[in-house]
Length: 177
Image 1 (cartoon, helix red, strand yellow):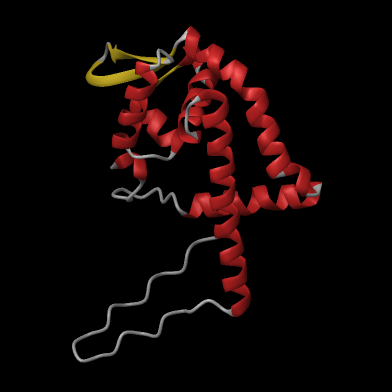
Image 2 (cartoon, rainbow, N blue to C red; image 1 turned 30 degrees about the horizontal axis):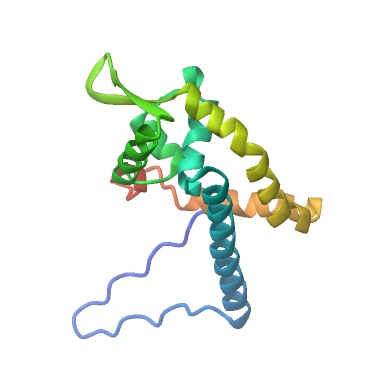
């Protein structure tokens, strides 16, 4: 489903159109969504800080590298997969390098490109941390939802994510910044 076109800009002397305010039900849904996302992010961040001394976003980067062929990805591709800015990725990779969990390698066919590579130590940290993290996710999300609700949640979030990732040139996406 496509997002609705934005309203035309009012001309000189014209009043801007009235905002499309959320209905009471939409407001209830929106606030519940925001509370859930905020609390879930905090819950998972605290679990990973306690068990591995890293924030949730760093864990996600290690997972993406572990899933990649040769446990390495170009930095630009990793930023896109993680849905974060290149600046945030660069800072995160620097911290992960300091811990010995990731290393950078120059790209042989692109002088400006670099790969992020998961080290054996990083893979071991991930292996040790994953069971506790999966249990935290299961308890916080999946154990609370029926199979039908899980399916609906997945479909809804896919629609939201797709709608926030336009494919046209010039799209303002985190990994392009």
